[in-house]
Image (cartoon, rainbow, N blue to C red):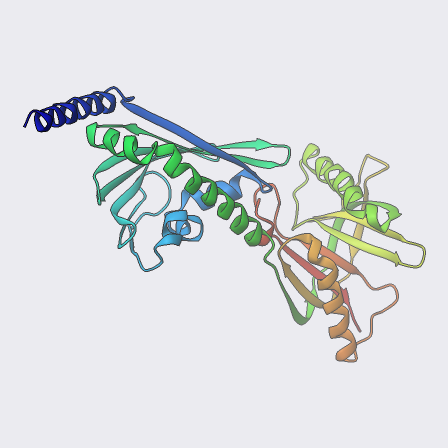
Amino acid sequence: MKVFKYILFLLLILFIGFAIYVAVQPNDYTFNRSKIIKAPVPVVYNVVNDFKEWPRFSPWIEQDKDAILTFDEVTSGVGAGYSWEGEILGIGNAKTIDVLNNKKINQEIEFVKPFESISNINWDFEHVEEGTKVTWSMTGKQDFMTKLYVAVAGSIEKNTGPDFERGLFKLDSIVRADMNKYSINVEGITQHGGGFYLYNTSSCKIEDLKQKMQVMMPQVGGYAMANNITMAGKPFVMYHKWDTENNTVMFSCCIPTTFKIETTNSNILTGQLEPFKAVKTVLKGDYSNSQEAWSKAMSYIKENSLVQPITGPALEVYVTDPMSTPNPANWVTEIYLAVD
């Protein structure tokens, strides 16, 4: 009998000791995970900011593909939200509390089942040389039941940190895959209206073309802005000669104008395109796919027995501005090849 009492007494001491251990655990928790994604900040931010994108990178939805997701009428920005119910996920909801465009997103996540808790989710987006540094953090309060859980199962960071790492890995994958999407459409024969334009001209090695264009185009555009010259359309490049044998290209960077401009800079000239019949090809996506677009345009000309005049214009028109359209998948380039 005494032995039994001693055992009960010992168990009571252990229980009280464990309860005290649980009670003195921190009342708050916080942790974060970071990853650098090779993409512009707005591209990454826009994915995270829209709850409809979350099934693509959420590590939890990945574990419960049969879960029922219900999206609020607003899915991005302040007031956005969605809820879930699943065998593994349980029941819960998330909502966006505050945003600082392309910099921060603050959210609140509430679990209803299998246990009740509310946590704060914070996203930080920082431009770095390699792209975007994304920091995903979580903070919250630990009541006694939560402390009891972590005392047995380990800290919330220990249990949830790997999920954050998995989510950031998936976010990286989908963002880069989205940026690589492109399409090429040969629209066929059209009539280009021609018109006046400002331009500068140069030649270089083919592999240096992009870098050269990035220097020359702002010079023409800057001249137009400095002299209050109205642009009559989108900037374009006119190719005069493409010599693969000698690895050289001659081209002009052009800004269309409403009328003939008498320039005051010897490096900026005025030209005029006469209207011409052309095969139009549209590339939607990164400019790195332009070679394929040109190949398809040339194939169309050959397949339809069309003839390119030796001195006929060959233009690339840049419909979108990369500064205002950060995702390369949304860039639009139009190619016009003159035909008879």
